[in-house]
Image (cartoon, rainbow, N blue to C red; front, side):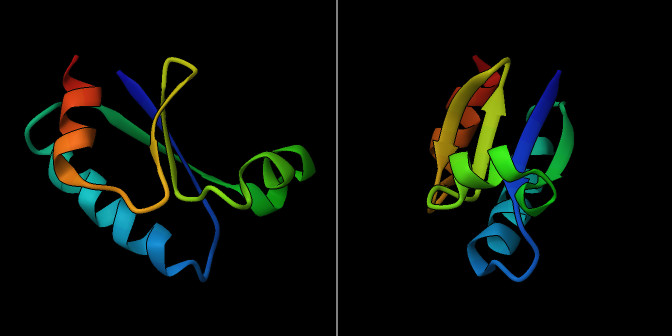
Length: 77
C-alpha cells in the first residue's frame, strides 16, 4: 500500500508528522511517498493551510496535527 504525505521543508508539524507516520508504519506495512507541496503550484494552493496531509487511495486520512490512533485506524482499514 502506498501513502502520500504532503508537506514542505521547514514545517515543524510536517517533521513531527513524518516521525509519527513512521511509527505507525511499524504496525501497518505501507510505503510513504513524501511530496513537497512547494514544487507544484496546484498542490501548494490546495494544501498550504492543511499540511501535513496523509492520503490513502485518494482519500485524506488526516491533516494538520496528526495523531497515532487516527492514522493507525485510517491506514489499517
